[in-house]
Image (tube, rainbow, N blue to C red):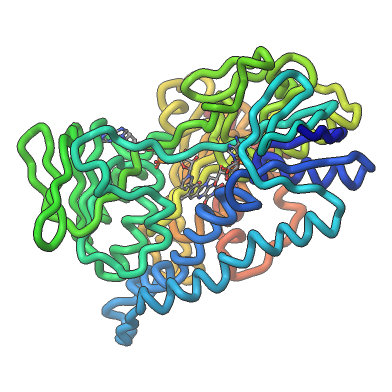
Amino acid sequence: MTETNYDVALIGSGHATWHAAVALKQAGKSVVLIERDMIAGTCTNYGCDAKILLDGPSELLAQLKNYRGLGVTTETAVDWKSFMAYKHQVIDPLSDQMTTLFTQMGIDMIHGSAILMGNHCIQVNGEIIRAVNIVIGTGQHSKRLQISGREFMHDSREFLNLPELPEHVTFIGAGIISLEFAALIMELGAQVTIIDHGSRAVKGFSADQTSKLIAKMEAAGATFVFNETVLAVDVTTDGYTVTTANGRSVVTNYVLDATGREPNVTYLGLENAGIHSSAAGIEVDDHLRANGDNIYASGDVIDKQLPKLTPTATFESNYIARQILGDTAPITYPVIPSVLFSLPRLAQVGVTVDEAKTDAENYHVQTIPYGQLFTFEYKNETDAEVTVVLDQTNHLVGAAIYGMDAPDLINVLVMIIEQRLDATDLSRLIFAFPTATQGIIDALTPLLMPEMAAEA
Ligand SMILES: Cc1cc2nc3c(=O)[nH]c(=O)nc-3n(C[C@H](O)[C@H](O)[C@H](O)COP(=O)(O)OP(=O)(O)OC[C@H]3O[C@@H](n4cnc5c(N)ncnc54)[C@H](O)[C@@H]3O)c2cc1C
Ligand SMILES: NC(=O)c1ccc[n+]([C@@H]2O[C@H](COP(=O)([O-])OP(=O)(O)OC[C@H]3O[C@@H](n4cnc5c(N)ncnc54)[C@H](O)[C@@H]3O)[C@@H](O)[C@H]2O)c1
């Protein structure tokens, strides 16, 4: 058995680790990335990137609908098969491109499953890697329902490679993945049924805006079923039947199990390094140390209340690199925006509207129906709105957006929240016109005046 020594060994090669690997290598450390699957992880190969690429035409079709009856008549069809070929053309080379980049930088890569053997020791492919520091960034995988017919169900990876667009898709779980994928394929003509055992969809987003989204999707033909337990999936001559505990029977062509994701912690040898994990992931201290010493955990695999997203993983990855290079400050997270890429999009940042409504002493909320106010800037998307949460001093502390521009608008609000910008700060700036951000800033600025807090 050979042994190789490194300053830092990182397990997994997604955003949770590779940013750290690059920063550490640039700082002169010897670094190895150990990856059992494709270099660059979920977001690049099986998640965000593929999803947003496939969503492109659906987004445009959804926006065109805002001009129905106003002179826009062209029908645009999307050939899924050709567009899927384009997805492969763009996404498939990314992993190799990242591999080349890392190689050129002098980062070593080992293909295999890592097992911790001790605080400074990892076994992979029967070889021993010794490292001063170790970073665990093993991410999550899709949960699989243990019901009869589970072999007929698919996960998000398979969905993102679908060669043909099914006529009807049944989604189990009304979470982020289901709502994004359902919205995307409905726009292309597919029928969808979404079944959840709970009473509401996408729990991290505003309840009111989620209801508005579901009503819109239902009006477009989606069937939502809540408080329903799926019992079995049976194969039929031309598809499948999904049966539920209440006797419902859904005839369908494709079943997606999107009932959540769980951390990759099994067979990692955590016990060999005194590391504890729960069903939510690896427990860490306020320095992201998993063993209180030299082993860190990063990204989706951490047990945390924060959104398990790419920007969070990237932030943690960069933080860990600085720790290994000598910084000692505990981690403090800025507000983290979440976006649901449905049609229209939902976005959320900071104090939630639902929480603010139950705490009138500390917060007040206001809805700006910007789609109606700024029809020309928002491309006739008249139902678009933002609900802002203000604290007692009228600073912006949270926001929920319903609208196609939500993913970019929320980033502007992130800056206003984090920098605690008030009306005077905003009035010193000039924004391009006519644009989506400027419309929102114009409507928001008067709400951020301190004297209004005194009057309230
Ligand atoms: C369909 C989908 C869409 C998404 N869309 C978005 C989005 O729009 N925006 C957003 O912010 N987030 C999105 N996410 C979430 C985002 O992909 C994750 O938050 C992000 O990838 C987490 O990065 P990570 O490095 O922690 O984990 P990962 O990227 O999952 O990387 C972990 C890596 O560790 C490897 N690994 C596991 N165990 C071992 C082992 N024992 N040895 C060696 N290697 C191992 C895995 O193979 C994997 O490559 C999406 C996720 C999915 C599934
Ligand atoms: N835009 C984004 O940022 C984005 C997009 C896609 C995925 N993601 C990542 O993926 C995760 C979401 O994955 P997801 O959508 O699978 O999970 P989720 O946690 O968002 O939703 C799972 C849903 O399944 C339901 N459910 C659980 N067990 C069930 C059962 N037995 N029967 C019926 N319903 C059941 C839950 O009630 C919940 O509504 C996010 O947390 C994030 O990490 C992020």
